Length: 216
Figure 1 (cartoon, one colour):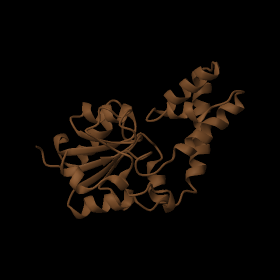
Figure 2 (cartoon, rainbow, N blue to C red):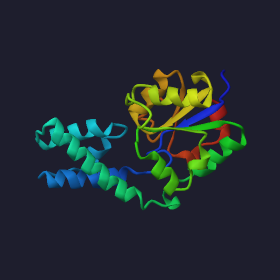
Figure 3 (cartoon, rainbow, N blue to C red):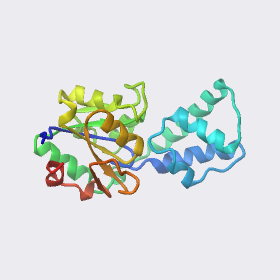
Protein backbone atom coordinates (compact mmCIF):
# COMPACT_ATOMS: atom_id res chain seq x y z
CA UNK A 1 0.00 0.00 0.00
CA UNK A 2 1.52 3.30 -1.07
CA UNK A 3 1.59 6.21 1.34
CA UNK A 4 -0.47 9.20 0.25
CA UNK A 5 1.69 12.30 0.17
CA UNK A 6 -0.32 14.59 -2.11
CA UNK A 7 -3.89 15.39 -3.09
CA UNK A 8 -4.63 16.97 -6.47
CA UNK A 9 -8.03 18.59 -6.88
CA UNK A 10 -10.05 19.42 -9.95
CA UNK A 11 -11.69 22.83 -9.43
CA UNK A 12 -15.16 22.89 -10.93
CA UNK A 13 -17.63 20.59 -9.19
CA UNK A 14 -15.06 19.63 -6.56
CA UNK A 15 -13.96 22.85 -4.82
CA UNK A 16 -16.44 25.33 -6.32
CA UNK A 17 -19.37 25.00 -8.66
CA UNK A 18 -18.92 27.26 -11.65
CA UNK A 19 -20.98 25.01 -13.95
CA UNK A 20 -23.91 27.40 -13.57
CA UNK A 21 -21.82 30.25 -15.04
CA UNK A 22 -20.60 28.12 -17.93
CA UNK A 23 -24.21 27.12 -18.54
CA UNK A 24 -25.48 30.73 -18.54
CA UNK A 25 -22.70 31.85 -20.92
CA UNK A 26 -23.18 28.92 -23.35
CA UNK A 27 -26.97 29.36 -23.24
CA UNK A 28 -26.64 33.05 -24.08
CA UNK A 29 -24.39 32.15 -27.02
CA UNK A 30 -26.76 29.43 -28.27
CA UNK A 31 -29.73 31.79 -27.97
CA UNK A 32 -27.90 34.45 -29.98
CA UNK A 33 -27.24 31.82 -32.66
CA UNK A 34 -30.94 30.99 -32.74
CA UNK A 35 -31.30 27.77 -30.73
CA UNK A 36 -31.62 26.72 -27.10
CA UNK A 37 -29.17 25.01 -24.77
CA UNK A 38 -30.43 22.89 -21.88
CA UNK A 39 -28.96 21.99 -18.48
CA UNK A 40 -28.94 18.33 -19.60
CA UNK A 41 -26.74 19.27 -22.55
CA UNK A 42 -24.52 21.28 -20.20
CA UNK A 43 -23.93 18.12 -18.12
CA UNK A 44 -22.34 16.51 -21.19
CA UNK A 45 -19.69 19.25 -21.27
CA UNK A 46 -18.25 18.34 -17.83
CA UNK A 47 -14.48 18.30 -18.06
CA UNK A 48 -14.57 19.13 -21.80
CA UNK A 49 -12.36 21.93 -23.18
CA UNK A 50 -13.86 25.24 -24.34
CA UNK A 51 -13.07 24.58 -28.03
CA UNK A 52 -14.56 21.08 -27.97
CA UNK A 53 -17.61 22.33 -26.00
CA UNK A 54 -18.28 24.94 -28.68
CA UNK A 55 -18.00 22.32 -31.44
CA UNK A 56 -20.54 20.10 -29.66
CA UNK A 57 -22.97 22.98 -29.06
CA UNK A 58 -22.80 24.09 -32.71
CA UNK A 59 -23.35 20.47 -33.75
CA UNK A 60 -26.41 20.15 -31.47
CA UNK A 61 -27.77 23.43 -32.85
CA UNK A 62 -27.09 22.38 -36.45
CA UNK A 63 -24.92 25.45 -36.99
CA UNK A 64 -21.76 25.52 -39.11
CA UNK A 65 -19.05 28.14 -38.56
CA UNK A 66 -15.58 28.76 -39.93
CA UNK A 67 -12.56 28.35 -37.64
CA UNK A 68 -12.22 32.13 -37.35
CA UNK A 69 -15.90 32.48 -36.38
CA UNK A 70 -15.53 29.66 -33.82
CA UNK A 71 -12.55 31.45 -32.29
CA UNK A 72 -14.61 34.64 -31.99
CA UNK A 73 -17.59 32.79 -30.45
CA UNK A 74 -15.38 30.98 -27.90
CA UNK A 75 -13.82 34.30 -26.90
CA UNK A 76 -17.22 35.96 -26.57
CA UNK A 77 -18.49 33.13 -24.35
CA UNK A 78 -15.35 33.30 -22.22
CA UNK A 79 -15.69 37.06 -21.74
CA UNK A 80 -19.23 36.61 -20.40
CA UNK A 81 -18.06 33.79 -18.15
CA UNK A 82 -15.11 35.81 -16.77
CA UNK A 83 -17.45 38.73 -16.09
CA UNK A 84 -19.73 36.41 -14.04
CA UNK A 85 -16.95 34.70 -12.05
CA UNK A 86 -15.38 38.06 -11.23
CA UNK A 87 -18.32 38.50 -8.81
CA UNK A 88 -17.79 35.17 -7.03
CA UNK A 89 -17.48 35.15 -3.22
CA UNK A 90 -16.15 32.71 -0.58
CA UNK A 91 -19.79 31.62 -0.01
CA UNK A 92 -19.54 29.72 -3.31
CA UNK A 93 -16.96 27.23 -2.05
CA UNK A 94 -18.60 23.79 -1.93
CA UNK A 95 -19.41 22.30 1.52
CA UNK A 96 -16.44 20.66 3.23
CA UNK A 97 -13.84 21.78 0.65
CA UNK A 98 -12.00 24.27 2.86
CA UNK A 99 -12.13 21.97 5.86
CA UNK A 100 -10.72 18.99 3.95
CA UNK A 101 -7.96 21.11 2.36
CA UNK A 102 -7.01 22.37 5.81
CA UNK A 103 -7.02 18.80 7.20
CA UNK A 104 -4.63 17.72 4.41
CA UNK A 105 -2.29 20.65 5.11
CA UNK A 106 -2.36 19.95 8.87
CA UNK A 107 -1.48 16.30 8.18
CA UNK A 108 1.52 17.32 6.04
CA UNK A 109 -0.13 16.22 2.78
CA UNK A 110 0.73 18.49 -0.15
CA UNK A 111 -2.09 19.94 -2.24
CA UNK A 112 -2.36 21.00 -5.88
CA UNK A 113 -5.05 22.18 -8.22
CA UNK A 114 -5.36 20.31 -11.53
CA UNK A 115 -7.95 22.08 -13.66
CA UNK A 116 -8.63 22.57 -17.36
CA UNK A 117 -9.91 26.08 -16.59
CA UNK A 118 -7.83 29.00 -17.80
CA UNK A 119 -9.59 31.17 -15.24
CA UNK A 120 -8.75 29.15 -12.13
CA UNK A 121 -6.58 31.84 -10.51
CA UNK A 122 -9.46 34.36 -10.75
CA UNK A 123 -11.78 31.84 -9.05
CA UNK A 124 -9.23 30.97 -6.33
CA UNK A 125 -8.62 34.65 -5.59
CA UNK A 126 -12.30 35.65 -5.57
CA UNK A 127 -13.20 32.78 -3.23
CA UNK A 128 -10.13 33.41 -1.06
CA UNK A 129 -8.65 29.90 -1.22
CA UNK A 130 -5.48 30.32 -3.32
CA UNK A 131 -3.31 29.87 -0.19
CA UNK A 132 -4.57 26.30 0.27
CA UNK A 133 -2.60 25.06 -2.77
CA UNK A 134 1.13 24.34 -3.02
CA UNK A 135 0.82 24.28 -6.81
CA UNK A 136 -1.74 25.37 -9.40
CA UNK A 137 -1.77 23.63 -12.77
CA UNK A 138 -4.51 24.95 -15.04
CA UNK A 139 -5.45 25.38 -18.68
CA UNK A 140 -2.69 27.96 -19.13
CA UNK A 141 0.00 25.40 -18.30
CA UNK A 142 -1.17 22.31 -20.19
CA UNK A 143 -1.76 21.55 -23.85
CA UNK A 144 -3.59 18.22 -23.64
CA UNK A 145 -7.14 18.02 -22.23
CA UNK A 146 -8.30 15.26 -19.88
CA UNK A 147 -8.50 12.19 -20.24
CA UNK A 148 -4.83 12.85 -21.01
CA UNK A 149 -3.07 12.78 -17.59
CA UNK A 150 -0.83 15.80 -18.36
CA UNK A 151 -2.51 18.17 -15.88
CA UNK A 152 -2.18 15.71 -12.97
CA UNK A 153 1.34 14.57 -13.87
CA UNK A 154 2.46 18.21 -13.95
CA UNK A 155 0.84 18.71 -10.55
CA UNK A 156 2.72 15.73 -9.09
CA UNK A 157 5.93 17.00 -10.69
CA UNK A 158 5.52 20.49 -9.19
CA UNK A 159 4.86 19.00 -5.78
CA UNK A 160 7.84 16.68 -6.27
CA UNK A 161 5.73 13.63 -5.34
CA UNK A 162 5.64 10.38 -7.40
CA UNK A 163 2.24 9.76 -9.09
CA UNK A 164 1.77 6.55 -7.06
CA UNK A 165 1.69 8.67 -3.87
CA UNK A 166 -0.95 11.08 -5.24
CA UNK A 167 -4.74 11.00 -4.97
CA UNK A 168 -6.86 12.95 -7.45
CA UNK A 169 -10.34 14.36 -6.67
CA UNK A 170 -12.55 14.57 -9.77
CA UNK A 171 -16.23 14.93 -10.68
CA UNK A 172 -15.94 14.11 -14.41
CA UNK A 173 -15.42 10.75 -16.15
CA UNK A 174 -12.62 12.23 -18.30
CA UNK A 175 -10.87 13.42 -15.13
CA UNK A 176 -11.15 10.02 -13.44
CA UNK A 177 -9.70 8.40 -16.57
CA UNK A 178 -6.87 10.97 -16.63
CA UNK A 179 -5.93 10.20 -13.01
CA UNK A 180 -5.89 6.45 -13.66
CA UNK A 181 -3.84 6.96 -16.84
CA UNK A 182 -1.36 8.94 -14.72
CA UNK A 183 -0.97 6.06 -12.26
CA UNK A 184 -2.79 7.80 -9.41
CA UNK A 185 -5.57 6.80 -7.04
CA UNK A 186 -8.79 8.72 -7.60
CA UNK A 187 -11.74 9.82 -5.47
CA UNK A 188 -14.86 10.54 -7.51
CA UNK A 189 -17.10 13.40 -6.43
CA UNK A 190 -20.65 12.61 -7.49
CA UNK A 191 -22.45 9.42 -8.39
CA UNK A 192 -20.95 5.89 -8.06
CA UNK A 193 -22.96 4.83 -11.14
CA UNK A 194 -21.25 7.47 -13.27
CA UNK A 195 -17.75 7.43 -11.76
CA UNK A 196 -17.42 3.65 -11.69
CA UNK A 197 -13.66 3.63 -12.31
CA UNK A 198 -12.85 5.68 -9.17
CA UNK A 199 -11.30 3.98 -6.13
CA UNK A 200 -13.86 5.68 -3.90
CA UNK A 201 -16.89 7.89 -4.62
CA UNK A 202 -18.33 10.50 -2.25
CA UNK A 203 -21.05 13.10 -2.83
CA UNK A 204 -18.76 15.96 -1.84
CA UNK A 205 -15.65 16.83 0.14
CA UNK A 206 -17.87 17.22 3.23
CA UNK A 207 -18.04 13.39 3.17
CA UNK A 208 -14.27 13.06 2.93
CA UNK A 209 -11.89 12.44 5.84
CA UNK A 210 -8.20 11.65 6.35
CA UNK A 211 -9.25 8.13 7.44
CA UNK A 212 -10.99 7.55 4.10
CA UNK A 213 -8.01 9.02 2.30
CA UNK A 214 -5.55 6.71 4.06
CA UNK A 215 -7.72 3.66 3.38
CA UNK A 216 -7.25 4.00 -0.39
